[in-house]
Image (cartoon, rainbow, N blue to C red; front, side, top):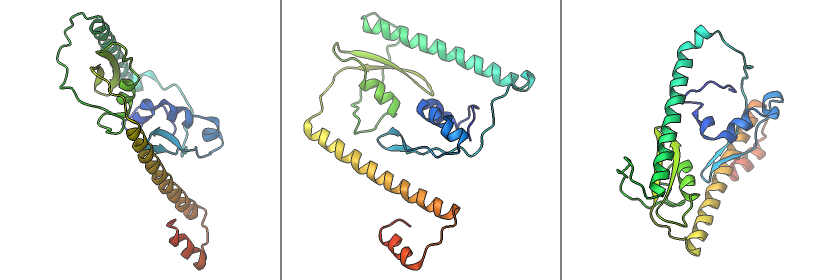
Length: 208
């Protein structure tokens, strides 16, 4: 359902703005089209289709007063948290002392290990590393994170090759499953008649 109401189910559209842009495109809203495959990460693919669309309107204030107050408080809290995180990062980067001294135990991260949320991993990987330790901040649902990068190890060619193979295998597997599900849905919705010989061929190639 296309809409702007923020719930746990729609939080993904805040995390991935490209989904929201695709969902509210003319093709999906006005023409009822199904989107192409949207890649969120090497292991996450999404296809969107609008099932119901409620045009934007302005509700009576009394009906949304509590939600508005909560939203304003949340927005102010996030702004304060962001400002505090950026201030701490600036001081740490310049060698000044801050109240932020309790960093967690260092961990090794890589795109292959997947031991951090993809968005946080992307922020760390894109941080400058010409002068270590380096710092970066990023928002997560629990608040703002200040990450300290202490060392960087360049990936070897063999690791890059392995990563490419893994990503390719994951992509092929997901695309195959997605195609299978879409074909199955189309067959059911369009009431396609499948003859016995065709059914055997479909089963042989694993499209059922």
